[in-house]
Length: 263
Image (cartoon, rainbow, N blue to C red; front, side):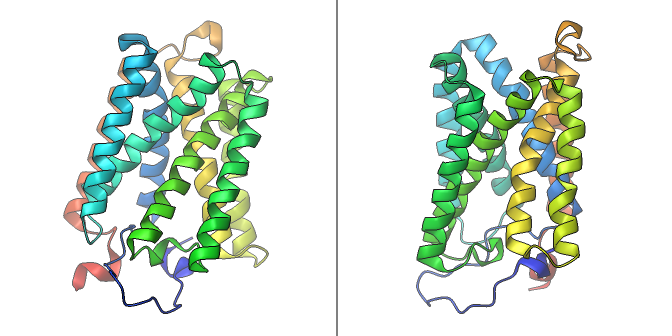
């Protein structure tokens, strides 16, 4: 699913229009997206263990609010600002799902469908207002607000779904295999014309969350929990370094801007 597949050419109202605020959908987009999901999973757990749940949530909330404030002040896509916001959404989205389960005792079998309903409601309101869910028409503040609300909902949903499969018998490695297979389905369905590009994109976007989180958990957690036992800190640092490397490459090469890089 590349950029040209998700562009919506419907004319926009000439009010407060900006350059599109979302990157081109390339292989680098999906790699970094998966990396942010895994890093968000282990960073969330690490912060909660180091600081305690309440301070961790407060810190994550502040970081999320700050990163989104920066993102909303910009009138064009800026690589580092966009991906910093995605990382903060990943950390906070993980905590939102974990708070429901650990803090309030809500089973993943309940929270996962609940987050799915929330996401469906966001999409319904977005489409009713804008008549498109295309990520390549994010050129107004309202569309940007809908976009980031949807992104946050996808992270919370994906976290709950990944933890659900890990605790009902698949384990973390089994969950990796399950979601790696699942993420191929929307791409194949779109390739053979049975699923439109926008739906295929958002379906794959949701699945990247449990895929990356399950992989990171498998690497970090101990052998008694079916993991490699590498530890939360090393895995978080390694995935963070990988994110910085890819984002730095895109910032220099501008391959995430496509035709916009020449304008």
